[in-house]
Image (tube, rainbow, N blue to C red; front, top):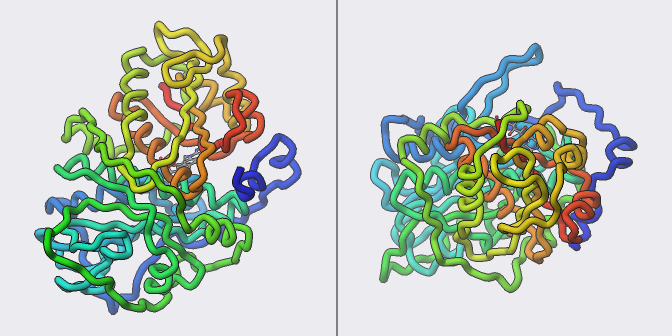
Length: 424
Ligand SMILES: Cc1cc2nc3c(=O)[nH]c(=O)nc-3n(C[C@H](O)[C@H](O)[C@H](O)COP(=O)(O)O)c2cc1C
């Protein structure tokens, strides 16, 4: 097991001996805005490409608390801390000038960071030798936004949230005729330097929604952007930095080239993406076996990527009509019985989610490429949200669970990556 994962397990005792006292006034900013001297273009939802971009990471709801106003987004995030930033290159897309952009969430605009030409671009940093027509995305994390609250465990959440954002790209792309390929083999060190991240922010993955332009060889673009603050305050976390460094070179990757096929209706999918929210608690409602099967099929579809890692999905069936209660993995029952209470306990006593939900999920892996396998868990999580909400059901990600006790419960010694619950 990767040492970082082992060191950041929750246990019944650890969450009680390390209470987290936070003052919300000190919360790092969750927005990165480039200075006004850069060219910025406000997204116009009437325009097809702008609409596509908005459906990846746009703001969709406002909450007002005594301490201020908070915005929720298309993509979910552990604790709504949104550690990730989204960058992308556009080439040959109608309505957007070729270039490298930053998605500015706060103002729903895109900032042109760097122009590109027919000869140079980001392609080689994602492993492409020819020019790519379309979008090349890069997802980063400003980890302090999350480590401010979640301390050492935050690297896990940065990866899960990044996976959700990659899944969000995948979902928005379903509104278009192109498949999205996740690219984990990116030149992280070089790109971090070029983007001026200065150890505060780093890239975790790329994604391509683009087609090769035959015979158009491309050279790697070179630039150096200045550092732009994206968290207001910052405290380095040596453990997280080491975990990132150590997992940045991927080894023995397996490529998946078979694209997943989803059967969503485009209009309804768009509404689902736009209105997605996390369920804050379930009412013990049951779902049908048809709904359960539909969702399990979505989760089992391949994730197109250059470094696929195996992630096991365990389902605790609490309330599915015509299905026996118990623990279930890939079509087989491992344990029969009413395990709802236990599922809630395992998620740090979040009974209103994992006990009151119709199904609770645990994702585990024993694979080696930590950044790739963890982000895949996030992509699967995003698929679970979209499929459940599409069927009119609720969903919530659950990043907090007693790691070792989940292992005992499911009967393996793999790394426990993520829990989720769905229901009514
Ligand atoms: C990785 C991850 C872990 C999460 N963990 C929990 C959790 O343990 N308990 C919970 O109630 N919500 C959890 N959530 C839901 C977030 O609180 C929610 O996404 C965030 O507040 C934004 O709200 P929204 O999803 O409705 O847009 C999690 C979400 C993600 C993506």
